[in-house]
Image 1 (cartoon, rainbow, N blue to C red):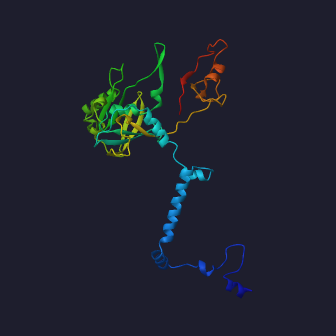
Image 2 (cartoon, rainbow, N blue to C red):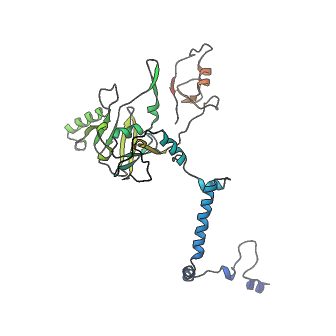
Image 3 (tube, one colour):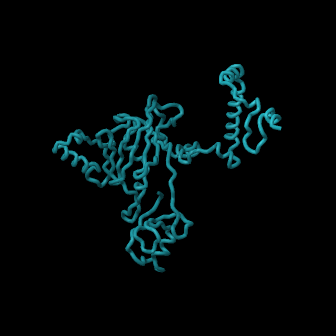
Length: 318
């Protein structure tokens, strides 16, 4: 029996056999390379089959959960349908002139290390156009003025290579960087060399192409008094035929992170509309409520506040 098993290539066991049949024995690398050089058609046919399989799935669309893996994309990236909708809402300002420069700017969250936005902007556009294209939740807070709710416009600045590019909002008497430059001048008088040659310019008068920047370097954007974003210039290239051809399409968002909205902590059905700090009736601090649950918890039948020792702010998203 043992001799017969040896002739058959090993003892038959439940586990792995001791020996392998002759057709599975190790083949030298030289012989394999010779076979591939003599007949390269099998590898080409295999590549063609894979490409045909992928094309079939893209044309037919995902059917099952397994097939949806072929079409898995980043939810934050703008798809063709979303991009066409955005471009249809942009104003028409004429074609982009030849030789125009396109700059890609990445904007990061003020407290996290997450990228929140990527913007394409033309080199001939002003720095204030880039400032207006940066989307932040603090710019969406509404304030009451003469009975109407209007957006609160804040002063801001870019800090790029020892230069403050300021925007002074209506109603503000001095730029947001004034305190920093005053402090730096005082340090310079005391003999601090690192605070020399700080300059101020208005971002309305500066084009993007005139900036002295380095790809991949971290620069600074500050607005709403103390909201600080890191911005990185990731790409500089010429405008080509694959870009939107109308000037009105720029600045253009090509990436935007997925906004997360909390549910109401009371009903857990509606999206939260208010965030409350220091509320004694809430199980957490801060607490998130919809309008209906907030009125039920904090107002009487006549609509008057039951108590006022808490702070309420509008909630948009995280």
